[in-house]
Length: 110
Image (cartoon, rainbow, N blue to C red; front, side, top):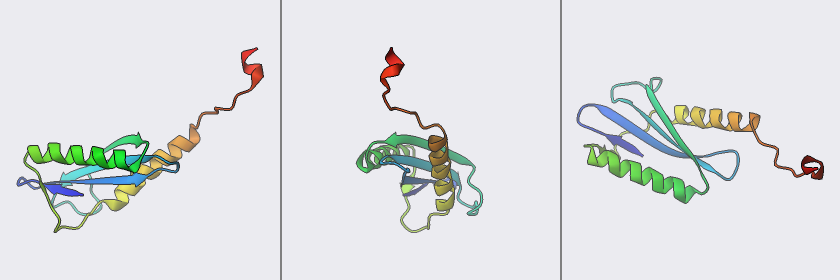
């Protein structure tokens, strides 16, 4: 989803799957003239337990931005998809490195 305002600012919002059954919302913003390599601002939210929850959050954010003067832009292409995928990849790696061990061992309570 792409939103833009009349001051030359754009916001791209993505909903991407994690490496488990959860989803992450990624919002990237920057100047409309910025090339595909430059995305100055990134914000991640999640994990969401379902894609529907993430999509609802995306819609709520889009409505808040529309209230602030942004409009949906269905003409321009999304420039920062690779940045969004990189953000989610970083989340996946961090979650794998810090995965909790939830196995129960009776010795743990004795």
